[in-house]
Length: 315
Image 1 (spheres, rainbow, N blue to C red):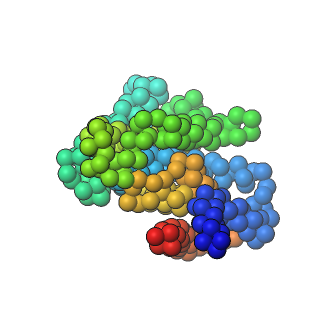
Image 2 (cartoon, rainbow, N blue to C red; image 1 turned 135 degrees about the vertical axis):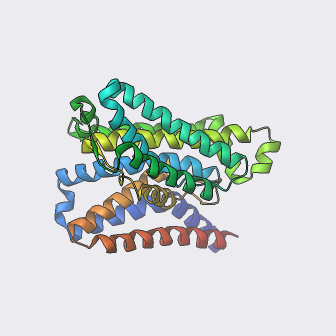
Image 3 (cartoon, rainbow, N blue to C red; image 1 turned 45 degrees about the vertical axis):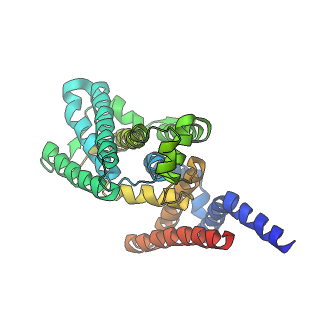
């Protein structure tokens, strides 16, 4: 009887723990700073989380497949810079298409080289450094401003009182959740992360899946760049420097296992919101940005530690 109760409690915490954590954090924020529940502030939280959320969707694909992508922040910056640079020449539509294509190419290069045997950490770190240098070359180290009000509306516009970018993120996240849970491709990504050799023997095209998850990550980084640069109306070479760490943090907090084979796009949404609420709460309380890094790192450690302890108890 006691074992059954422990098993049910473990199953409950695994399924709903992230939601409970989010609810507790929201209640704490409301108590500590009543301004948190103001509609304007809630809208601000949602707007701020949209970009990290889109990056986290791609990161969840990659981590579930058993890899990592440290280049998403630099891909964000480089594609955003190229879009700003080309906009006066091709128009904003042409620039966006080229930016998305660049994101896909970067992802393809990452995925192919990692499939050929390069460690994901080293490959994506090297690509990140290269892209950061290219972004500085394109801009000559200076910000480039948008020349299209229509383009800026992508990041600054509202629909029914909610920022357009929030709808964009939710559509992407829900589509990704459907792909991961209801399609053969999603099952193949889980299989690759769980055991690559077993996946290969099962007839899964390892090369195709590995490249595909990185292409998804690259394209979504470019989509996030469109929204981010449209919101700012410009792009600078330092933009997005820490975005890869935020995307990884949201994914891990959402319960995705770093070793691959287990995770959920829906829970990643909760992870994104936890980071967004935490950042907003600390800002409202006037906490130093340096301490915010400490709190963020602490939450990541707690999330990973709780999962490790749960697995030890189960085994």
